[in-house]
Length: 214
Image 1 (cartoon, rainbow, N blue to C red):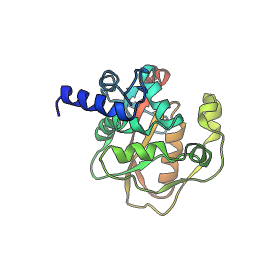
Image 2 (cartoon, rainbow, N blue to C red):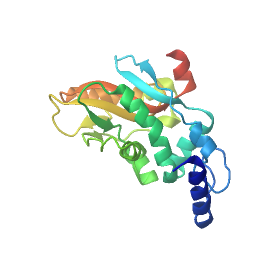
Image 3 (spheres, rainbow, N blue to C red):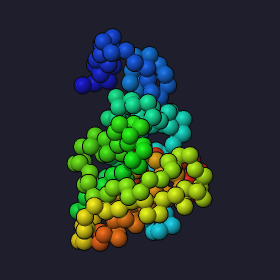
Image 4 (spheres, rainbow, N blue to C red):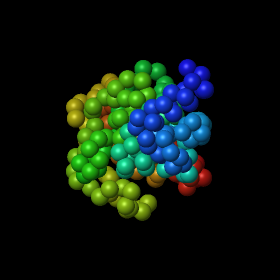
């Protein structure tokens, strides 16, 4: 379907189910064509302190931030497919050899509040296969978004566990937004403790501060 036909189809659909664009607020679109175009991925590599290399697709600001927050915090799952496209590009760039994908799990509190696991939903929408269900939260913790950099680092150690022995298995970790790297570092620790090899990680976006430091 060319762009003109796609635009016409979206206009027709919006008459039946009117919504506003999660990126710019325009009427009648889950994510308008202009905002979809702004989600063009530019994958870049970021190396964390534990040696894990993360490939990130987008910068977490502006309409990217608004679209991700609408998806995660407002239940706008109608934008999941558009967000999954740049994530798929980051995952593809991060994959080296035969690997399995594993989504960083939501905390129990986040899952109860949202009713879904945003990262797992995005991974499934990439079309790259379902994420392996080998990680789980192991303890209650304060949500990361409410904490500063030092508190984030203290909040996470021991908060995730592998659900089975993983010797001989290779994984690429997937998360939505890379901020300090503490979440991916903890997930990688849990996988390695179970015998897995963490090849790399991929995220949909990373914060401007993180981008500037990498």
